[in-house]
Image 1 (cartoon, rainbow, N blue to C red):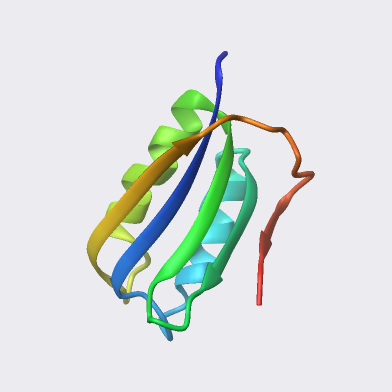
Image 2: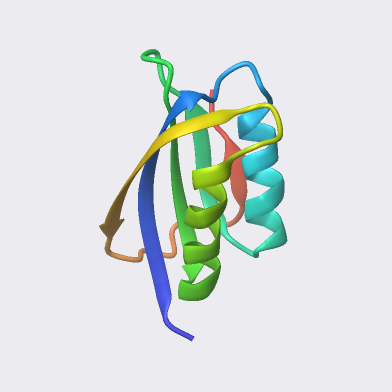
Length: 92
């Protein structure tokens, strides 16, 4: 299976709605590594690495988001896969 890495910026009502916790749960369910964090401008930023199909499923999940979020935009930047992460973390 091909490996993939994406850097994602999610806009909308994505802070204060447990978005990062749900993102971590979904990423771990899909077997992905990387991180997620809130940005000062109200967006959420994340890096996902893993099997290509799992990364693509995670990007689709981000377009819907957590139960109380309202996603209005998802910007996805593909980056070279590095394998640098050992798990998935919430960054502060």
